Length: 93
Image (cartoon, rainbow, N blue to C red; front, side):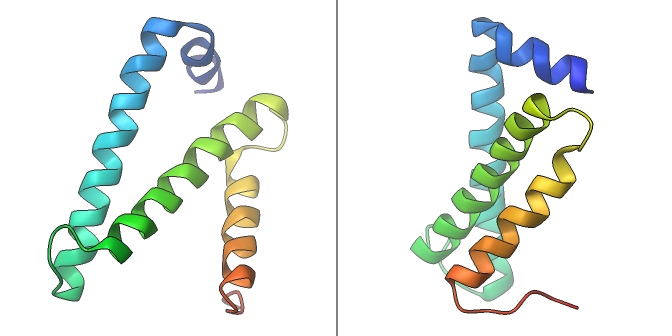
């Protein structure tokens, strides 16, 4: 998987497809959040939450490329912990 991530980041044509993939994931995530909360499909809070989540996923992939021994999960957990702190919430036990 790391080799595929590296290839995507080094190949402009693949980057375009990767960007489109993340846009689709973000849109679906926002719609799903809105449905679960009984909100309008274009609810701004759901769109913001989805955009943040997808951004963290992308940043985790970049961190993985820079630190392949650590894996993307560690960075993702750290990023979500920072987000919770910024929002004034405590991390789950």
